[in-house]
Length: 218
Image 1 (cartoon, rainbow, N blue to C red):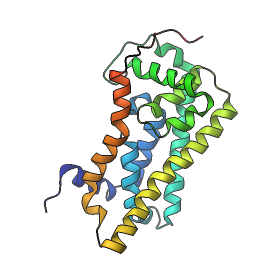
Image 2: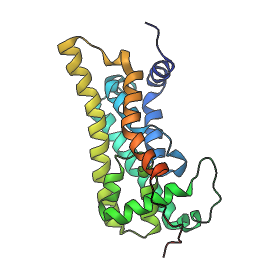
Image 3: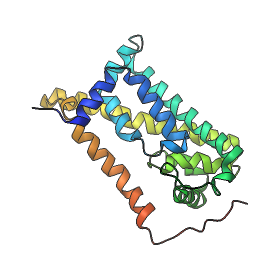
C-alpha cells in the first residue's frame, strides 16, 4: 500500500529529529502569534504513537520524559505569549493585518477570555488558534501572574498528557487486541484530528454572526 504525503512527512519528521521538531511546534503554537496554524493536537497524538521512538532519540529515556519535555515546551510557549502581550500587546490592535496576523483572531481570543475568565488559559489549550492568542490577551489585560502560571501549568499538563497518552495507549491496545498498527494509518488519523479540533473553531471565527468591536484595551 502506497503511503500518502502526510504519512511520509510525519515518518520523515519522526526519524529525523522528530522530538525537537515537536517541541518547537508546541512552543510556537502556544506562544507565538505566527504559530496559530500549526497542528499541535494531531502532532501530539502522532508523537504518542511514536513515543518510544522519540524516547530512543533522546538518550533512550523512558517515554514519560518525552511527555515532560512537551509539557515544558507548552508552558514556556505560553509564558512567551504572556510576556509579548504585556510588553507589545496593545500595539497589536493597531497592527496592519498580514497573512500571518488577523486581528479577528485576537479579538475572538479576547471575547473568550472575558466570557470564561481565569479558566481561559486552561480551556484554550484544547482549542486550536485560541491557544495561540489566549496568553497574549492575558498579558494585554494584565492577568495576575500567579493565576496565569497556575492555569498555564495545569492546562499544559492536561493537554499534553491527554493527547500523547491517548496516542500511546490506543496504539498499544489496538496492536495487542487486533494486530492493527496505527503507524500505518497516521495520515487518516491526523486528518480526522485536525477536522475535529479545528472546524468548530474556524466556524466560530469565520461564520459567527457576532462581530466583535475592534476596541482598544483599557
